[in-house]
Image (cartoon, rainbow, N blue to C red):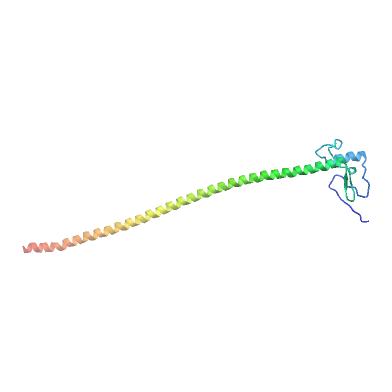
Amino acid sequence: KASFSYSSPLSSPLPSPYSPPKRLSPSASAKSSKSSSVAPGGSRGGGGGGSLLAEDLLVGRTKVFLRESALTWLEAARQRIAIDKVCALLIANLCRCQWRRCRRAVLSLQALARGRSARLEARALRAERAEAEVAQRRELEEAAALRLQRWWRLRAAAAALAVRRALPRRALAKAWL
């Protein structure tokens, strides 16, 4: 015969399939009901399944035999687990919704900041381009003014030279007359 040991997560250990259910004394029963977990239904006496005792279940070779109190206790534990899972799913959904809302807000703030930055950069580029156009226009105006001044000075110098050249001829002409 191979020995088989099983540790149960329940408040009391499971009986072996070959042994009769373990009977607890009234004092041990009171201690185990106080120390074991209590289901939401309340105490054991009211059918609410307060704690699971070794006498409430029997594990056979192919079946598990449960008294009504053990079944009630297992059902309450299943409901607790289901409630915990549903609550966890609801909280996760709320957190996801809140995260999406926060993400949308952050994205809109980032878009506003990028738009403002782009507008400021565009304004600076337009101002720089306008300054470059103004500087180019000034250079063209200065070049045109210098060309005009050169032409005017050249004309004035040519007129003065013509007058100087014409003076001796007039003087000669007057002398001849």
